[in-house]
Length: 328
Image (cartoon, rainbow, N blue to C red; front, side, top):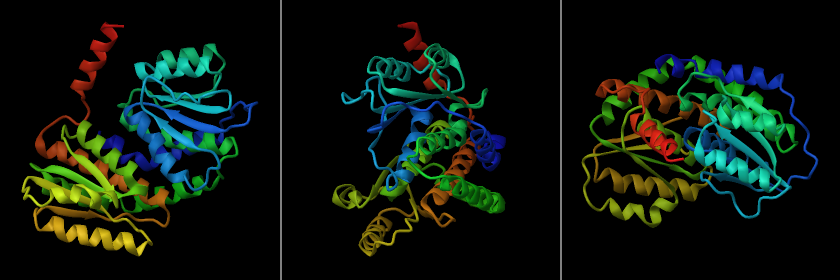
């Protein structure tokens, strides 16, 4: 896992090089809505992309994490189906529904049944690198998703320069990122992490939570501002000395939101002595998100290391999948 995380900037560059040589089929029907369907680490790529393009798209984009698809799916839906293994039951079911509803479809996978069915129906397949833990293919998945939106004239090519800026910043700051991550991991060891951020970075917080779950074998939760201040903040009226709060610097220009965060911080710090703020680098939301993803990946790795667990194996997920396949 160490080398996989270390190679994140290079893997982003490899993904960009790949899509520059990629040609997709043109869609006949006008696109009225977009759905990205996928589970786990395949699904979070869609959530990240949705956050980054929400102010650029002229059609609605929905993220789907289920066997079923929304009732409105039809021939004017662009359905992007993402599964690292290509054998995820929920995603295969959604693919079949997309076929029945005559959606325009594109597949992102490393192989499996999904690739076979896509090829059988002459559906474009964008490849993910093989022989990795699924969560380690995030770089290729997000670049593929952004490229699909670009190819269909839904966003500009600007995302490439933003990703390349992130690659440069992460590469230049790699040593300090790892040092910070190791310090945070030591600080939160033995605590239950609570991740707080603002709405634009919620998907980054979810990715962080998932990495703590899978790499560190650690439960945690997340919440977002300003919603926190309408419910969860009351929960901090009780002392919880086993909680470690990690907050992303929001980089918001909204003074009201800044004030809400400051007031909430003051309340929270009265009830826990373990509070950390993670600050990203970069000029855009996409760049800062990639920086925070890399930093939090390292935190999850070092937390696994310091607690003596294997960051690669996911026995519980494997057990569930085996049981599901046995009952097909």
